[in-house]
Length: 68
Image (cartoon, rainbow, N blue to C red; front, side, top):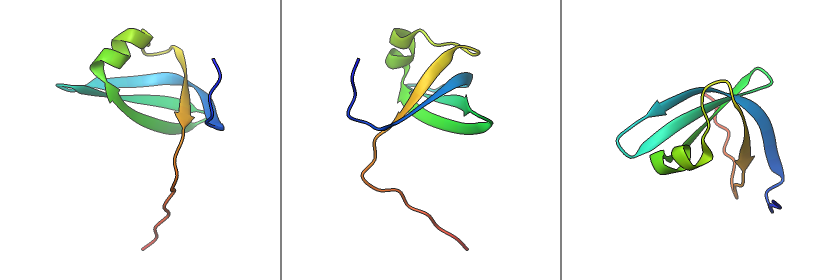
């Protein structure tokens, strides 16, 4: 598979918190946590479970940084 996104981070699934329609999938990427909100249907189709490898594919036009 080829993607236009340039930010592809390989990690390990550390948690999948299912909601009514969407799930929050948390990945450990080298000691940092990345969380993605995807549909429950997508979780089923991907077949990912805790401890399995997955990729965080980040495609964003804006990244915001804030401080107090």
